[in-house]
Image (cartoon, each protein chain N blue to C red):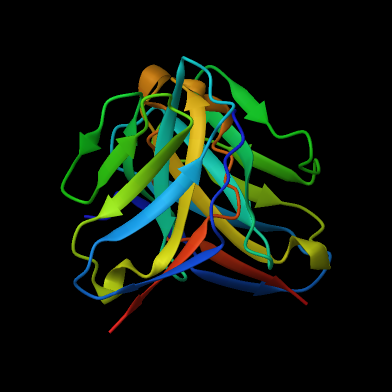
Length: 112
Length: 114
C-alpha cells in the first residue's frame, strides 16, 4: 500500500465545509483512495473511495488531483457529530482481504 | 438491525485467563476481520478470514486464534491473557474480491487484563 500523509489535527466551524487533505505521492495506477473515520469510542466507519474521478455520496465528496498524488475529503456542512479521526488509506482494489492499514489520521474537531 | 455486532462490549479479566470475544454480521458478507487498537490508538489488522483462507498478521501471538462456526460469525479466542493484551478489539466484515476494501466495523470490545 502506498504511504499517506495527513495533518494530525484540524479545526472547523460548525456549518462550514471541512476540507481534509491527504498526500499520497507514491500512489500506483491501480490503487484506490479510501477514507474512513472513527468517532470516539466507536468502530471505524467507511466514508467514500475513488480511483481518479471525483466522487460524491451522502456523506462526503472526494476530490483527487489529476496526478493522483493528493486528495481532499470534503464534508460540505460539518456538524458537531463529524468530530472524529479521519483516515486516508491507499490500496489496490481487492487488497483488503489482508486487512486495512490505518495510519495516525487527522483529528477533526468541529467547533460550535 | 446492527450490521456487525460484538459481545461483550467490556471484558475485565485476570492475567493467565482464557477468554473469547464473539462477532456476528448480518450483511451476508463472506470475509471477516479482527483488528486491535492499542492505548496509543493505532489500529492494526490481526486476522482476515473467509471460508477458504485465513490470513494472519505475523505479529499476532499464537495465543490468539479466530474460530468461525459459520459464515456470519468469527469469534476471537485468547489464551493465557497478558497485560499487553489490554486494548479495544474490533471485528469487521466485507464482501470479497473487489469490494474487500469497504469494511463494516463492529462497536468494539474493550479488554482490560489485570
